[in-house]
Length: 448
Image (cartoon, rainbow, N blue to C red; front, side, top):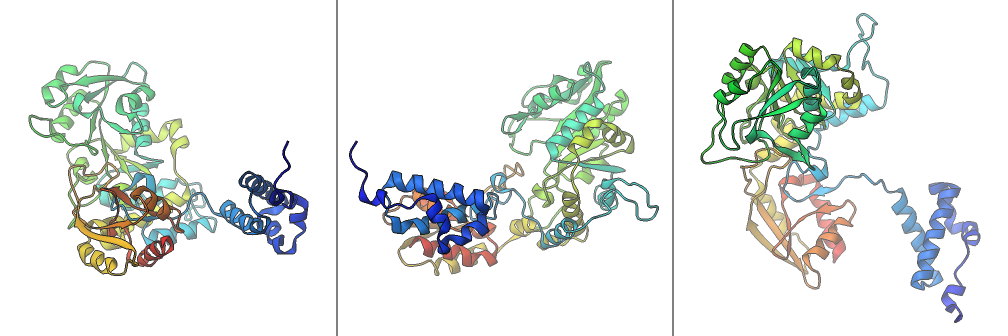
């Protein structure tokens, strides 16, 4: 074997490094086991790269910082996609953040009735606001909308022979291969497809009814659109049929829109569905509602009681932090404080071009800067046919591909997430709060 390079023979050992005063902070930051583990990893990498001994200390401190940095951390969303699923969808309003922090730092009356001293129900903290906003008799809250749909099907189908009627045009995939037929099967029911992909009439539902029918399910097409030769019965027609058949009408509304909001593309609201006779409406707590990830089921007391009595409900229910965030968000919606909810403020923003041009003037020299019109989706499976028309900032850097530039931005702290198209990185300030623009510029300067 040839002798090891001199630089490798001079690399210090683990124990020698642990005794160095200038590395004593490793013990404090990582603990003894963590410090040894990091030192071994850095030494192995140093030997593989034939690194000089003088670089070891810097590498150790960098490795310690990486280990201590949380895996889940804030990023700057410069994509323009407001409800970006990969980035956690809706950022919470400051009032919701404050209420979550207060609930997280102390014991709460989550399931305690302060008047009687007896055990209460956690969803009662939201009952008044939800009743006012939806017109429903009762509402329960679970982990997400898919869980709410699953719970409704599992609770109302009654037995494995129970049939659920769904239009063929509504057999959607929610995401990550999570499909309505699969949810129905997991919910212990039998799917009965009604009508055709593009046209379903009320007569199709009538012909599909049997003594085994347990639920009529309506699925809002929130993540795609149908145009042309299409038809579907109204909610009023479906609710009338459900009454005659003595089965519940369940609607998966998805988007979580609770009000008609000026300047925001319209979506069906929960209150409108309840008013048209839907027995159970399921919807998201984030998306257009603008709160935390959650799934809500609102409807008649008889049907919601069946969902609450299901043992599966306990497995799907939410914790106090979700309840706190949701209560604060609902309170903002109740008083129509649209611009205090980040999602709605971004949707309503009209100053994007002014901000983009001002920001472009501050970009450090060395970048090619382009201002261009474009479009963005709202995201999160909401209003798929609508396009926002932002003013985009296109960036290119000599010697760096667009992919390399995007990667460098992601490695900044905080990480910056941009769009790539036409060999440029594009920044959309619609999803960048003004307070984050300084961090965005710092990321660009760091690349230089």
